[in-house]
Length: 248
Ligand code: MG
Ligand code: MG
View 1: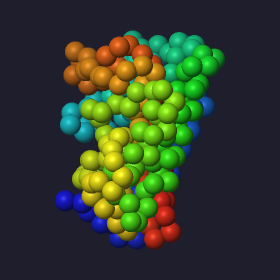
View 2 (view 1 turned 90 degrees about the vertical axis):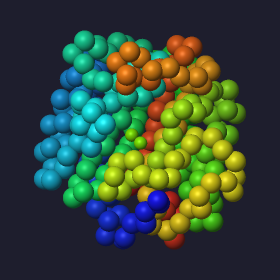
View 3 (view 1 turned 120 degrees about the vertical axis):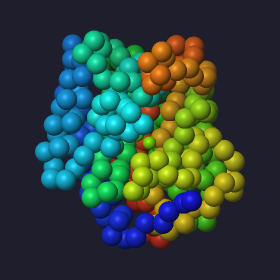
View 4 (view 1 turned 135 degrees about the vertical axis):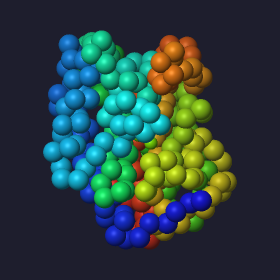
C-alpha cells in the first residue's frame, strides 16, 4: 500500500531530513585518507544523537549493525563500517544515512572523493548526481514511477555507465522501506501514478562498467560483479502541488 502523508508528517520528515543532510555534510568535511569507516560511523551516530529525539534509522534495521552504510570503490551499497577498512587517497566512499524523528524517517546518500580522484571517478560521481537530479525533476503529479526511472536511466546510459537493477529506491515514512519500489530504469507512464503527499527515496546506483552485482560473504555488502567503480546518490522527496520537494 502506498501511504499518503499529511502536511504535518512531511514537515517532520523534513526535520529528520535536515539532520540526515547535516550528517552527510559532516562526513564530507571529515573524510580523509587514513580514517576508518568505523570512524565515520562513530561520528555520524554521535552527531545524529546530539539532536533531541533523533535516532539512526539503519541501526538494527533488518539486523544491520551500524548507523551508516559505507561502501568503498566497487562496493555499491550496504558496506558495514569497520575498524579494518581504511580510506585511501583516490577512492570513492559512498555514505548512506537514515534518521528517524518522531516515528518518521528520512534517507539520503552521497559519494565522497577521498583526496584526489581520477577524472573517470569524478565523471561517475557527476553523472550519478545529475541522474538523481533528472529523476527528482520527473517526480511530479501526472507522472508515474516509471517516468522517474526513465529519467535516471537516460542520463546514466547516455554517459555510457551501468544502471544497477537489483537495488531500487522506495517509498518512505513511518516505515523505512514502503511501497512503491522506485527503480532507476523504466518506461514513461508505467508503474504507480505519483500523487500529492507521497514521499519516496530516489537513489541511483551507477557503475563505471557493467551493472551486474554480487553480494559478499558478509551477506550485506553489494559490489559490482566486474569490480568497476560505483557511485550512489539519494534524496528523500515529497510530491507536492508545487512540484518535488527535497526533504534531505
Ligand atoms: Mg539510503
Ligand atoms: Mg533508500
